[in-house]
Length: 190
Image (cartoon, rainbow, N blue to C red; front, top):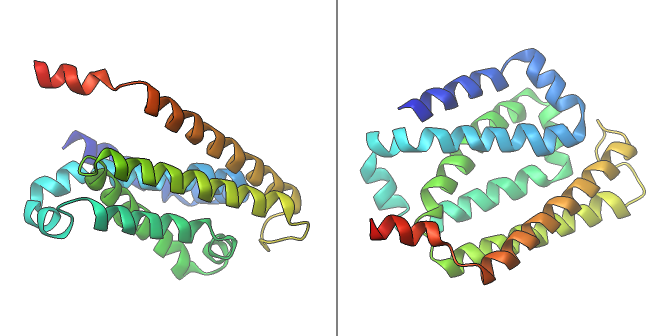
């Protein structure tokens, strides 16, 4: 219940008009701070919702694949430059962002991640690395303005942050292949 309260407080904070204006005024903050924080809100809501509606999660997402697919679809949609532009220009798209990221990305991600096997998790990491690399190339290499509401300099900065995120995900993925997770085994032995 505490996590849900923290999630609600964060959600209400992110919906404040000055916070929205500030977080959407800088492209990197919009993409790499506001959007992940909205996903985290959904992740914080998940335990409460799983307690309240256990059959929904078991029937709909019993092996984690439908939930992780929904997460990927929503995340890829919000990486499209036009979606970011429309969120700033059209209020219904802005409302969709505040609904889709917590409830259609954050909740399915947290529910699905523990249900996926190692191969499934590795596939998701590889997909996220490839998507980050593609977005980095898109924002860095294209010399024209992709987003109408942001300058080319901001697009290039976003591209470099996508490259950094892709590199960090790659490093984490490679180390996870060689370093065994002992924390899981320790909790099972106790």
